[in-house]
Image 1: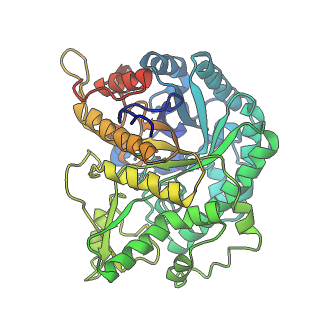
Image 2: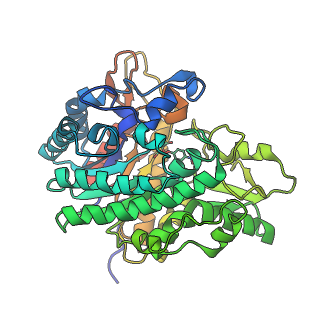
Length: 475
Ligand code: PNW
């Protein structure tokens, strides 16, 4: 028997990262040939985002990336996950790449590498070029082929210097919040379209993975980031367990089934048969989607608690934490009720439950044996405010990070192959439909001046990154 490893020490090669996405931080929406994405259109449509806020300026990362990279280096981060704006690289979603657009990402990557920070690129974090939406968007099959071409262009341009690639971020949100409940861009509310979108996102992932492999050095790693729900039921009653199973299929199985196993869960096809005949699933699609992956990214914030709906109470959907809409993001699940979980919550109203992260990691350790795992997002929104001395103290976020990183460490001790953790988010930013009101950053952004101030959690996390162990809770 080997010596027990102290529970707070992480493997030496563990990546200590932070994550962001293009539309949430870049701004500069009309510069260097960029055209509107669905999020520009959506945020500029009255009533779609809190206070009508948009990503027009966001935190101006497009112009301040050097300062932001310097900050990451000063804190001690060893990795940075960011996304590429498709509309900067291929403004109409088709045709040759715009060099000025690619150049921005080349400069960013070189700056990261010069500071010893490992870049991890997400190709698609929800910002479809508007022209592709006008041609039908994700419910349209051709969009998957357009994505593969875009993936190839970016892979050709940056594959020599970026090793870690993620095709899609949280395709669940793109499909079901974008085309089902409509709380995300493009704001459509069509259950059948949302299921077609999910399939074409799967296809985009598979075709995109093949395209990347055809142009990049074999040493590079290709992964996908799923918002893998941890579904819990209010009881072990068979009706509640069936409700849990249905939501698990609609949140997880719909993506990891085809991506990791090459098939959709039979129970998903059955439950959604009143909504779609699945004729959009063509011969050969499942083989195209089921590509060998080098890693899997897990995004985790909070568990999902469900039961069978005793009375078809539509208002329970409002408790599902996915924003306000009269349309459900769960096609074929009108017989499921969503419940608030008990305990402490973050500013998003999401309950804090690190055991869910441990559970999630162990689940994929079982279901995808041998596949290295990364936590590609985890974090919390709080109502942070600077003290009179200008410092920002966020002990709640430190406690959140401590709890969740401890869960990761426990999973590693239990045999999981977790290679890194990316805190969401590096800095406060545009939180989609919630606008700038929800602050997820480890770095505080003063939206009047765009000045960056590391919160106490950023210092705490930086100490963890430098020592490979979790500092005590007291800041
Ligand atoms: C993720 N839900 O969004 C995204 O990847 C980030 O861009 C985002 O800022 C972060 O988490 C915090 O919200 C989600 O409704 C948005 O289940 C909504 C849901 C999940 C994740």
